[in-house]
Image (cartoon, rainbow, N blue to C red):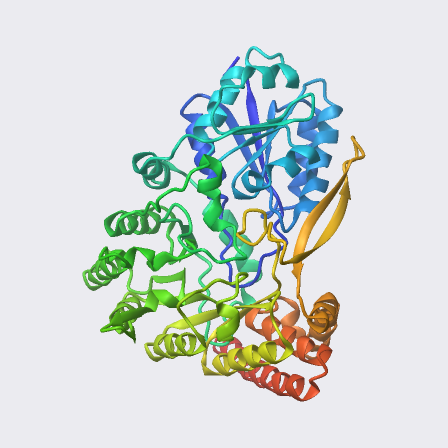
Length: 553
């Protein structure tokens, strides 16, 4: 029976890809597939983000009864789109004689389990899914595929959530994750995987024309690595910090791979896949450089030594996410830039450093929605200047729709960001402060949330899906409600004037055009003209460079 049972994992289209995010296989799904394969359980993965045309093929296979369990990856910011896809597969299953069990897991499903269960998921796997999912599959063999029988047999499994017949929710917390278990999943198992990186890289090559823009070096052959268990920060708007603590219903320490282990993963991916670049997908990679651990400093020294001794190619580059506080030290009570760490990152050939600046307002940095205590605008600028000085490229992450923001503060933030764009930074702009379940401010009565409505096609029950947090200032709220359409119109103008941008609109240019739209909507045409002038200057420089590159080729 177990050898016959077959699982399909569906990775849904993200709708959030940009031209500086390396396309990569869904690591979590492949890790689970590898674990189940060791238990003689067949598991297929279809990634609709890689090829949306595969959807019809797999819907037909579900109609034909090829699968017993269908796992759907979900995201909150694309929830309505994800639900549309989920119900395509549910309807395909209804046409089959076989009863399919629909499951989901991961951060978004764990932190919003009640809505996903109301919307069409049968069972949610909490936290790290390998063991509870395997236990669930074992129980299915005596259930005859009946959902109620399955639920009756899994009451004692830790790490699952489901809805009972009487409408109540069962949430069985995950077992407490140990350092040894996490290391097995995040290090040992990664060394056993065989991932289809080349399929993803071939797709990226098709759109590679504008990937290198305004000093950015984009390497198609990039591998994503995860070296920490979860985010250590407490930003008010972000839910990343909550995933493991919420799944376990207990605060959890941050687990980290050592510098030696991370370096072994780098060597392995270069050897096995031919990786030329690495994107560390941790929310805060340098966290291990605190409390005397020096994890990233040690990693940099390993990389530098390996390059000097031809153990890894000298041209291998690295990108990561960090926080302003990672580069600030205190000596005798005074703030000081950690110039040694920055120099080591540069020598190891780290290229891009994504920084969650969010705003250049010292007041807003301390507000609950941001909650970056201990830093101010001056600290942000000092760190950016220091990183630029050593030849690294910071990416400044900016949020427009901070709920406490004022008109003067957003104008100042945009102007400072554009100043650093001209200095050589990349700028990534988020228009809305999205309302993520699990974020510290999510249930705060101090904020008003814009919602979208969705109706379950089977139960006809209406769900209100949180979208973004509405700014407190009515002027800012009105601007935010219009900025998406205004930006679209501005971008179409830019593309019409510069047809070569039709292939791909670089992230920094998109951010700059968002700034133009915001300034216009706030009645600051003088500021909008400033930003448009910078945009045209950058476009002109890049167009000339593209012509030179094509002529050389």
